[in-house]
Length: 188
Ligand code: ADP
Ligand code: 5GP
Image (cartoon, rainbow, N blue to C red; front, side, top):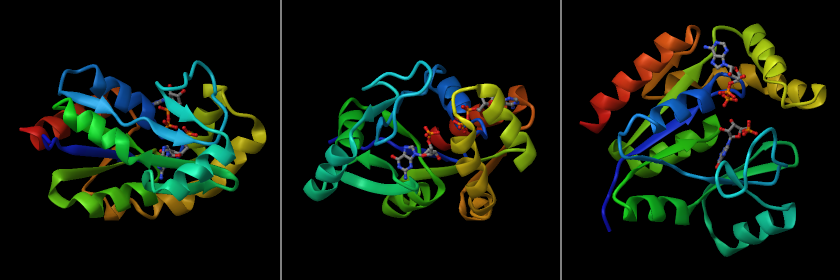
């Protein structure tokens, strides 16, 4: 099997991870997105098999029992997310590099499995207040879901120093340029 490189993006929800990941995926670095499984419902324009594999809690548990996950976490209470081993195999068999969008704990776990083959990137928002504004203006989550995400953000921010690089996503244009530069260096 071919062995591509792995780039992990982690951050509190609302930091702009998905925005940055979508940007780099369009830039032709031979990158492919690792589609995670989740037990939450689709939001906005999300599609099954594109943004996530949306599973019921029972289906998710079955995959855990089958040993299908490289890692999985109960990121929020009763909401499960996990990286399928089959995703990494599928993407590397295509000769591509793998991009992950995972929570901070999952991100550091993937980094420790793969070592130098992986780059762990932390996307840092300018402040928790700004994070809340972004989640509100994204308009895809109800107030309770936003509260769950904000309540977790401080703790997630404390993991930043364990990552290989930190990208501060204040000005989006600067953050996208910085992300491209970091990827170019790592992949070359
Ligand atoms: P995440 O994937 O980390 O949850 P998103 O990429 O969905 O975050 O971004 C959250 C919201 O903030 C989206 O509506 C996005 O358009 C917006 N956003 C992303 N980056 C910035 C930025 N630098 N400045 C202002 N808004 C941003
Ligand atoms: P969201 O519901 O906003 O799409 O994602 C919520 C959180 O779950 C984000 O921090 C996201 O990165 C994380 N996440 C998504 N997929 C996975 C995964 O496969 N594993 C882990 N550990 N976290 C994930």
